[in-house]
Image (cartoon, rainbow, N blue to C red; front, side, top):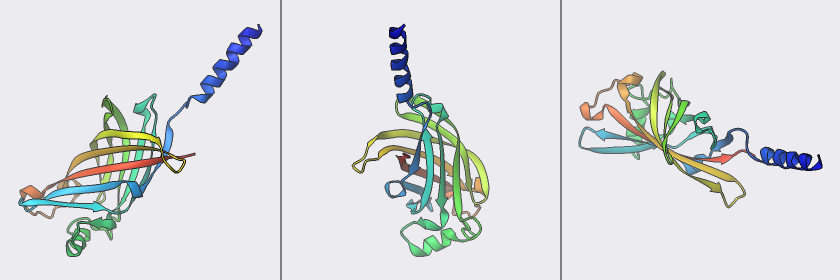
Length: 190
């Protein structure tokens, strides 16, 4: 009987040492980026970014489908490396940041497709319009950091059609879609 309790105790310790649910992470905005790329009149690429964003995610290695993410982007922080253009992008012609100061992504589902690759489907709200989008996602890596924390990183991309979000200013056919890229690094909550 003592052998039975010994084995039961060992199994209990083992089970309690394995995470039973997803790990929660806060996004480190200093080690991430939200970028966009759009053709400038069809002649070249205009690349920019949003300097401020925040969010969190949960990730479960045993059940990746249960993973979730939420990211809020400060649209007033748009930066295309040209102050006058940024002012125009913030105006009612484009983002209308006085009315819509944030954009938001909330995941609905996470589907692994192969090693370190997945599709993240979620609701993206921009310019007051919410639409379902799919991000092609890569699990970049994870591990201990030099400051005693544990980090996990993902990157992903998608293409948005501006008119789908009520942004109808037309700069020509080559400028109607924007490519979005996000790279995030999360610090696991203790």
